[in-house]
Image (cartoon, one colour):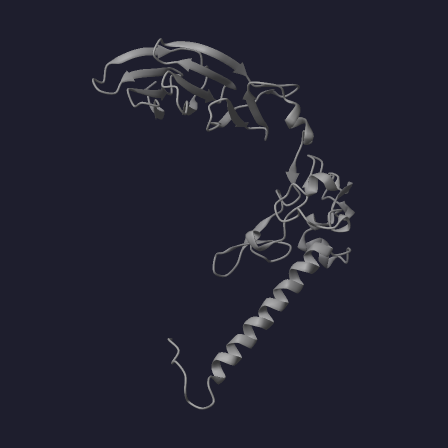
Length: 267
């Protein structure tokens, strides 16, 4: 196998450079002389995450598709801590990204199964305030492209970033209680009735009837006569009002000053 470098990182004071190679080794180099100092052995698959500690120049974090997360002392060439991301009933989860907190006391990782892993000192009580599973109900809604090649939500025909804040649901699409819905930016001050999404029953292509947030229905389901989402109605109303305001502004600009005075408009 021809060795290839998959990731490079400098340590905090730039004295060392760490490279991840596709033979699963990490190599520590002297950044001034180019001398190879250490081979770090531990990973069993390719590594695409190398993160230096924010202030301790000895510490480097690595994580890879083998589900392993290592904390290394690169000055000694030894591993300080190791975690294996085993998921019950599903094998290991490949680790895709990791970041240290600014104070260096915590780091967070994301894996191939949609998990956020938080490591650090102290207890986990502050994190028990939120449910184990949190998704937006729009996460898996299909997208389309319009004639200008812009991306739109298939159901509402709106640009995703212009849609109202989504609802928080679990992995099966069941909405969380209102206290969690207020965690979504834009819903902090909503009344309770606006934080309870409507649920509907939708037939899948296999004929199975499943319960889901109505806002997840597709265009085909709308055409089939199913109850439209209040959320989508709000979006259409807002778009209509915006179009009306735009039309009024254009008409006012076209008329211009009646007495011929005023600052000329730029084209």
